[in-house]
Length: 159
Image (cartoon, rainbow, N blue to C red; front, side):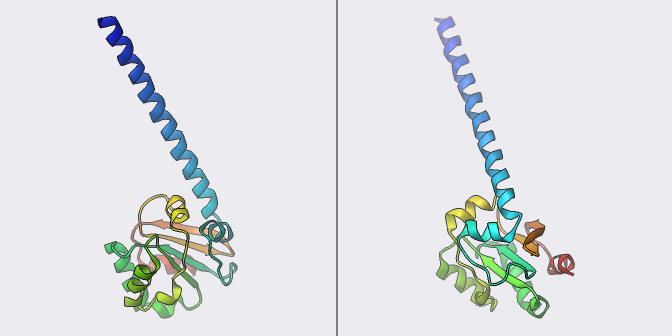
C-alpha cells in the first residue's frame, strides 16, 4: 500500500514539475515574441491593429489604464507640458473600452492622441503592467520605460 502511494506521489510530482517547466517555456516564448514586436513601430501598429500618420516621426507610445494612479500622474504631467511634445507623435492606448479611455483622456485634454487597438493583442504584447512608455525614432525602438516615468526623462531620450 505504501509503495502504491509513493508511486502515485512520485507521478504527481513529476507531472507538476513537467507542467511548471512547460508553463515557463511558454512564458519565455511569449516574452521573446513580444520583444520582437515592440522593436519597431510598424510591427507594433500592425500587431495592435491601428495605423499611424508617420512612422518616421519621433513617436511616444504610451500604454495606460484610467484606474492607474501612475498613469493619472503621467497624463497630468503631459497636459502641463504639452507644448514640449508638439514635435512628436503622441499615441495613447488602453485595453479599456474606448468610451472609458476617451473620457479619461478628455480630463487631461489628450483625447485626440488616443488610438483604438485590439485589447487582446495589446494585453498579450505589453507584458507587464501599466504604465509603459515606448519611444521610437525612425520607426525603431529607442527606449522602453516600464512604470512611472518623468516627462523630463522622456524628453531627454528624444533630444
